Length: 299
Image (cartoon, rainbow, N blue to C red; front, side, top):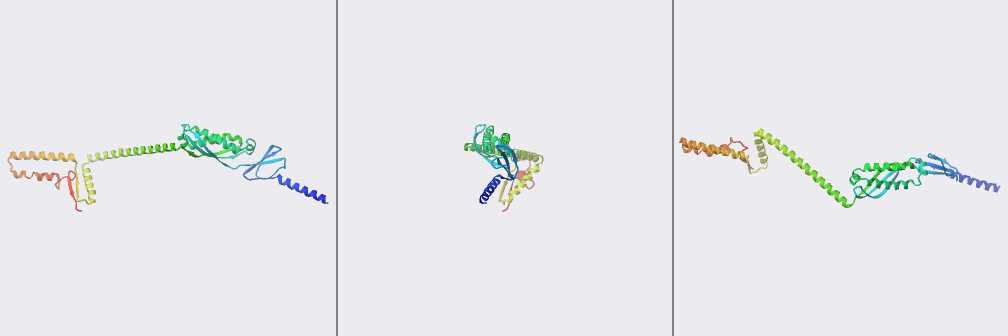
C-alpha cells in the first residue's frame, strides 16, 4: 500500500511537471513559432497554447514597432565636407516565421545595415542637400532598408536623421554666408524703396507743374507745420531761379520806366515811388506768398 502510494505520488508529480512544461501563453502583441523536432509546424496566435514537452519548442516573437537609434556616423559628403550624423529607425516584424528562420538576430542585422545605408546615401549628397532635403534622404534610406529587410520578415516603417554635427569652421562660414545674404536683401529692399520714392516724387513734380497753385498750397502747409512749434521767426525761402527772374524783370521794367519819365520831363518826385512799387510786387499784401516771404508769429 505504501509502495503504491509512493508510485502514485511520483506519477502525479511527473504529470504536473509535464503539464506545466506543455503550457505556453502567447501575448496579444506576440506570435509563437512552433518547432517540432527542429521543424517549423506552424505559427501560433495569441492565447493559451499546448506543446509536447521535450519534442516541441515555441519561439515567441514580438510584433510591436521597435525604436532603434543609429549611432552617430562620420560621413564625408559629396562636396568633401566631414559631418557626423545620427539617425533613428522604426521597424516591426510582419512575418514571424521568416524573422526566426531566415535571420539569426533581427535587431543586430538591421542596426548594421542601417549604419551602412546611412553612410552610403548621405555620401551621395552635398552638404546643402543634406541640410535642406532631409525628407528626401530619409525616404531613400527607408526604401533601401525596406528592400533589404523584406526577406527577413521585417518592415521598416520610418527613418529619420536625428542630429547633424558640423565642424566649427563650417559653422562660421555658414554664418558669414547667411549674414552676407541678409545684407544683400537689405540693400535690394533699400534700392527698391529709393526707386519707388523717386518715381513718386517725379509724379508729384509733374502734378505741381501742371497745377502751379499746388506748390503754393504745399508751402502754406509747411508754414502751418512750422507754426505749431511756436517759433519766433521763420524764414521760408521761395524758389530761387523764379525769384531771380522776376526781380530782374522788375528792375528792367523800372529802369525803362525811369528812362522814359526822364525823357518826357516828369518831376523827380514820381521817381521816388519806385522802392514802394518794388515792395508791393515782391512782399506786399497782394504778392504771391510762395515766392519769397518772412512770417513772424508770436510765441
